[in-house]
Amino acid sequence: MLKSKTILSAASKAMFGLILAVVAASAVAEEYFTITDGLLERPTGYREWVYVGTPVTPNDLNDGKAAFPEHHNVYIDPESWAHWKKAGEFREGTILMKELVNVGSKTAVSGNGYFQGDFIGLEATIKSKKHFPDEPGNWAYYSFSTPEHKTLTTEARAFPAAACNGCHAGAAADDFVFTQYYPVLREGKAAGEDATGGKSDLLASRK
Ligand code: HEC
Image 1: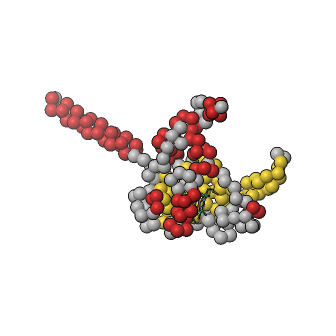
Image 2: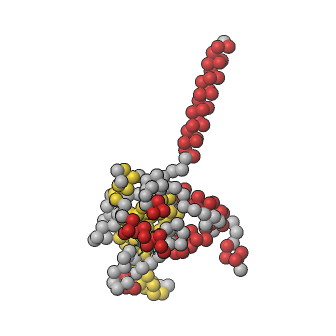
Image 3: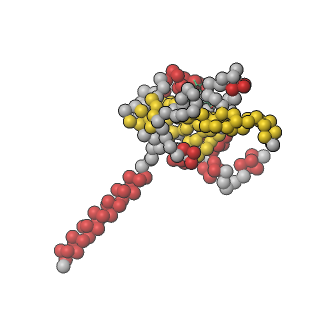
């Protein structure tokens, strides 16, 4: 009797250990991308990540051909957002997506402007010491856009540092990311609950 009880308690201890291990593993930071043999699979689901802003470089203000046409909807993965609003830095494994959308209309009932038309491209940047120990800032840059802007590639290889990192390193406000153009990131840096637009009234408290 005593013996079977001992066995039982040993088994339940083992089970408890297993549960702890599973909980610990799920607490390990998640990566929202897959890189195999240097190729980044086109990430999916990013329109449900945290949206940080939309810079606009319309063709008609750029001699008819903006380098990245035209609206750029930028998203950050949710775990990196959580880290950003808590610690104010981009965590190992941060991924930002930049989805390109052309100008669909220049008039609306609200007035003249630049209104979003069709999706025409997709770019990504990832910070990872593990994957890119030699890239400046450990950031690598990718594009899934195609020349005709109608389809996307299913995978992409990182650009050489000179093509993308250089400009980001020199001109971006915070760790290679252009936070100066993303109010959600700029205002949300280490801002905790205020970063969400939540508890306190940011605009009122600034007055
Ligand atoms: C001449 C400077 C310049 C170069 C070169 C450049 N970028 Fe950027 N990039 C910017 C600016 C400015 C922004 C933010 C404003 C915007 O989107 O227009 C940006 C934003 C981004 C973002 C959104 C996240 C962030 O870091 O702000 C991604 C992703 C991105 N670029 C990818 C690329 C890729 C891929 C390349 C190389 C093919 C590249 N960039 C080359 C200037 C540059």
